[in-house]
Image (cartoon, rainbow, N blue to C red; front, top):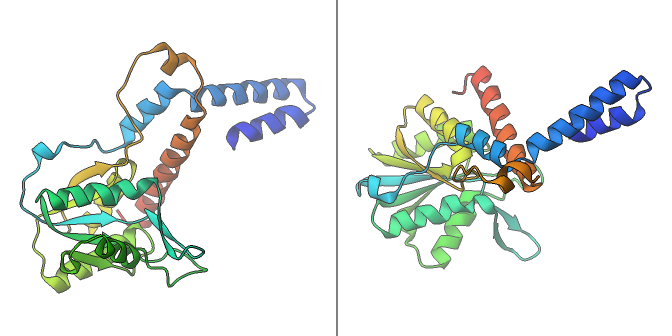
Length: 238
């Protein structure tokens, strides 16, 4: 969007000096936001690093699995998973390998049109359909955002008298905000980052010199999360 705005200004402004400045700005922004190395560097600085399973203990009472990973397809009448569904599938492995005893699937409906579409309920139904035990899947289905995730998860944990320890499973770019929201309600957990956008830092010519338009999506995710973190900070949610 910023690149597009700069190009429009360069096209329609009459002052030659400003036209040149906005044209240079649009080119500079394009080079920055399509540079694989710079994008990866920014993601490394923000994302909470992933850890190997070998560093974990096999004594977690539950994995807190954050939603925002699926939607209900009303045409096909079935759940559809997005890229962030790595949160769910990584937690299933932890469950099967004995690292966690139960899964707490977190997330209600963020839809104005379909408020009855509760994501955690839909995910639990999916997991039961593929063979998981219902008793091992706990849901929190009231929350609409990360702050409410923490607030209502706290209520669920207290009602079931779960003592922990807990492990939190969410995307690496979202882990920082999620952990601080949960700490606000006294819930401490081990971070288990998934769905990482960052990769190994490589000083390779193609990563540094050749534009990659897929980087724009990564920047969109990163900036959205960064500004979300800032809003939460000044709102007192962290």
